[in-house]
Amino acid sequence: MTKKLSNQQNPISPDGKLTAKITKDNYKQYVFEKSPKSAHAKNMFWAFVIGGLICVIGQIFIEIYSLLGFSNADSSGLASATLVVITAILTGFGVFDQIGRFAGAGSTIPITGFANAVVAPALEFKAEGLIYGLGAKMFVVAGPVVVNGVFVSVIIALLTLLIGG
Image 1 (cartoon, helix red, strand yellow):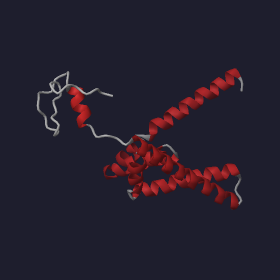
Image 2 (cartoon, helix red, strand yellow):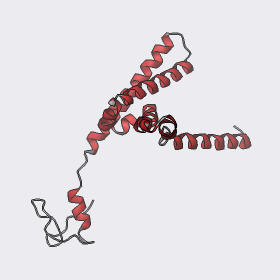
Image 3 (cartoon, helix red, strand yellow):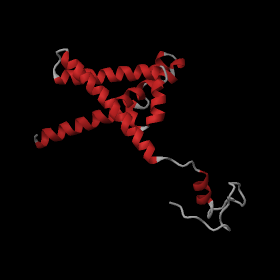
């Protein structure tokens, strides 16, 4: 945390007005006093609650699909796909953006964040057409995740093959 500078060095008066020239010495103090204060505890709480709620909804879908006769593995896959579709629809209507602003990482860490990362750029660039808009921009954010995921999977598979597993 930045320590409080003396009044002689502090470029900001008690009423928040700039009173002196900004220099290298007092710049940190100026930025510290002008930066908005974040409520970390509140943000972490809501990220935990919303992220947990998304996981609970996913578990409910798993249970519903299990009751319909699907195996546990199939139920999990169907629940993930259902969450992706719901997130894509909510992103299309602008609802998921509101959830993301409120919940922060709580909405982006689960699979819903990946679905939002694919759909949001596609919607943003849809006016550029199907190829240069939707096709090219859809994986701007999610593309590197997919590429790196495949690359790491291949490396792990090769290591497992060489070392044995």
